[in-house]
Image 1 (cartoon, rainbow, N blue to C red):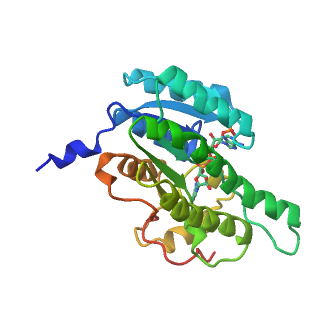
Image 2 (cartoon, rainbow, N blue to C red):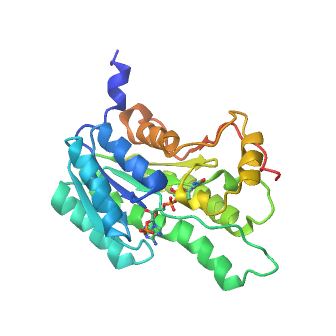
Image 3 (cartoon, protein in one colour):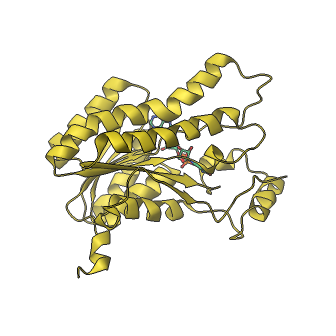
Amino acid sequence: MQHVPDLFSLAGQVAIVTGAGKGIGRACALALAQAGADVALAARTEADLEEVAQAIRALGRRAIAVPCDVNDEQALERLVQRTVAELGKVTVLVNNAGGAGPNDPRRMSADDFGATLAWNVVPAYLLIQKVAGPMREAGGGAVINISSMAARLAQKHFSAYGAAKAGLNQMTRNLAQDYAPHVRINAIEPGAIRTEALARYLTPALEAAMVRATPMGALGEPEDIAAAVVYLASPAARWVTGKILAVDGGAETPAAA
Ligand SMILES: NC(=O)c1ccc[n+]([C@@H]2O[C@H](COP(=O)([O-])OP(=O)(O)OC[C@H]3O[C@@H](n4cnc5c(N)ncnc54)[C@H](OP(=O)(O)O)[C@@H]3O)[C@@H](O)[C@H]2O)c1
């Protein structure tokens, strides 16, 4: 029998992580490098990417900072081309850039609603299209889409974000069928994770309500999501595709402030 802990190694793999400058994406990039991967880092703020790249190089892995707005298809094309040209291949993709704040359906325009849907789904769709060929040439690959528990909870003020992430989940399930067996595609549904994005909305009262709604009794940290990403990227998950993994401290109900 194979030594199972070896299956979690990403030695020899090359990953692309979007939204890699901060928060969950930054933690995923560092964790993938700790597990042995070289990493291409994408976000709009180059200084953030350079900081993460330096941290990865200090681990002895290669890293490239690729400033990129994931809403720009040509920038996504350049991201994949630079990764293959400079790191040799691409075998892991983490579609992490995304998100949205709460919305009031009495005020949100249809254009803004549509933009929220598009930005949480379309860049991931395009990047999967663009990496599928290189992943197949490299002998296979794994995609992890960062969704949200908002995709399955029914709660006030999340009609746009919840619908967008639910769309991302169903796209994950269907694209996994399209791209198997060469590319595995899974998603993670984080619960409330302590990042700058969450800090914009977090009041002491809301944090206390979130903790009450979380059986594990605490908010999550970016590393909680990064650990799940390493698993889904690794050969340990070689028979797992089209699945949505909740990493949410056991939350099943929205926070009631
Ligand atoms: N934090 C949570 O509680 C939580 C819970 C569930 C799901 N999530 C999901 O986790 C993901 C990351 O969230 P986070 O909390 O880690 O956010 P964050 O701390 O705000 O970090 C977001 C990262 O994405 C980059 N980014 C933003 N817009 C971009 C664009 N147009 N193109 C490329 N990169 C872009 C940002 O850098 P630049 O601004 O420099 O581009 C930054 O590096 C999102 O998909 C979010 O929906 C988060």
